[in-house]
Image (tube, rainbow over all chains, first blue to last red; front, side):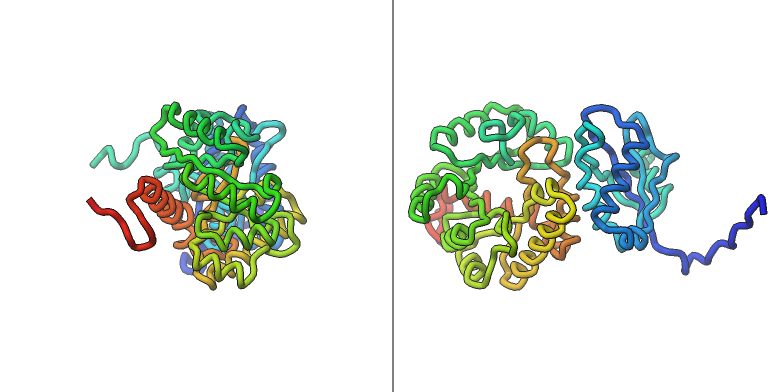
Length: 127
Length: 235
C-alpha cells in the first residue's frame, strides 16, 4: 500500500465549481506565511463555522504564495465566494502586527488567476 | 471615519493615503460634534491635504453630548448649514426616532448599538422613508466584536437589512474607522452586506451611488441652488 492509487478523474460536468481568490496582505511589518495561514483559517472558521467551511471547500494554495509581494491565492466554492471575502476582511491582527487583506480579484482557474493578477507581463501589451 | 481631531488615531493625510491604497474614490471625515470651531478646523485641515481623493467634511451627533431631544434639535439646526453630511449616532430608541423624524438628518448610524434588538420599528421606518433618512450598516462594530457579541450584531444588522428592504429605505455601508487600519476595501464591505442578505446590486449602490447622491444633493442645498424638494435654480 506504499503507493496509494488515485481515483480516476471525475468528468468535468460532475466536478464542483470553484473560484480562486487572489489576495494581497497590507501590513505594518512582514508576516511569515504560517502565521498568515493560521489567521485566515481562524477568521474563516470563526465566521462560517466548521460546517460552513466544509461546504466552502477552502484550500490555501501554499506554493503560489509570493513572500515578496505578500500575495497569494485561496480556493473556495463559487457559492461561498461572498462569505469568504467577508471573512477575509475580518482579519485584523496577526500577532502584534495590524493587517488588511485586500482581494485583488477572482477567477475560475489557477492559471487565469496567475495571468490576471500576478504575471508581470499583461495580455494587453501584446495587442 | 474619525480623524485625529476627535479620538481618531491618524491624520487626514495618512487616512487619505491608506484609503487610496485600498481603492477608495472618496471619503467622508465624520468627526464627533463638539463645537462649531472644531468643524471649521476640520474643514481647514481637509483643504491642506494633498491628494486626488475627494474628501468631504461631516459631523456625527452623539447621544452622550446631547441632553434631551430639544437640545438635539438645537444642535442639528446649528450644524446643518455648516457641513455637508450630518449623521446621528443611534442606539437609544428616542434618538433613533427623533433622527428619522427630521428631514435635516442625512444618515442614522448603528441603530442597533448596545441593544438587545435591532433598534428599528415600523413608525421609525415609515418616517425615515418620508424624510429621506438613510440607515447605515456599521462595519467597525462587526470588525471589533468577537464570537457571541458579533453573532448578535450580525443578526441585528441582518434584521435591519430585511426591514429596510421592505420599507424601501436606502442603506449605506460605512467603515466608521477610528484608525486607518480599520478601513477595509469597499468591495469587501459589499460582500459582508451581501452575506447578511442585502441584494448585491443594492449593496454596490450602498457604497457608490447612494452616498454620492446625498453629497450632491446637500452641495446644491448649501450653495443655495436647491430651494426645496423639486425646486432648483438652473443656469
